Length: 341
Image 1 (tube, rainbow, N blue to C red):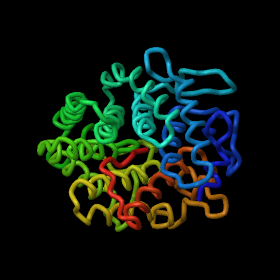
Image 2: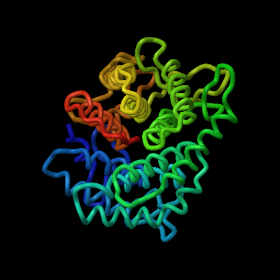
Image 3: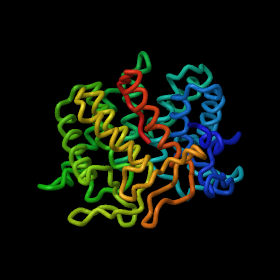
Image 4: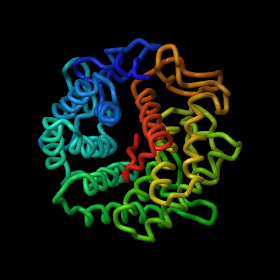
């Protein structure tokens, strides 16, 4: 299951892109990928778990700026700011919040130091997805770390998302923006997670309304039909069918599982299974994205089939969705906070 994941990882971190299943070291390494890879490594039960956790943690430590933000792209020992984003701040916070309560003392310490440094900046993010990632990290800290009182910061971010919703919703448009782009499900996911620790009914109502709007739109044909990245889905227009990316399928799987953990409603776990089945061929092209031979995941569904490349984001997304769904369905585990991609 983890063959390609480990193949894409060297002593620096997980490599961004691949040529088919061969890592392309020239593409460098990103905080986005290494943060998400750290969460996957924490969820592993393999011999190499500790080595991988330490590798990804070290990458995040070295990429962090003095003000707590991260330099997102590293290529041949040089950092570039070209793809820096609030998302990378949010994903860094989320990964560090998981690492801060993992079983490795050295990693716990490093993660707590990163969180202490970044939180003032993290609370200032304004993009909806970045807000959601930081909120998820805060909820993870609330449920996993002792002697920490950051519920007010969580409420501040949750209500930032609610404000986005109030500004953009319409009669037939229950969403936080005037368009749906990537990782859409992380927005209701974060609100469900906050409800788990605060029991704020207003937050729960918006979480349910927006996740229902998203899943009603994406499951119309009886399988997951992701918003394509060729134009995205702009309000009052049609959903573009291509390209469909694995990270978006994982986003739906994980958000539905968070909704299930919070509400206990079995319909959510059924939807998470349908979204997971997207990787195995229950999709618009009727083709599997997961490659059993390489243990990688193809980068996208495209009009003429699949993108043959198997980069880091794709395999990380598949593995995170697989881990969490498997644990809930087979082990009965219902962790209060479900990770996001």
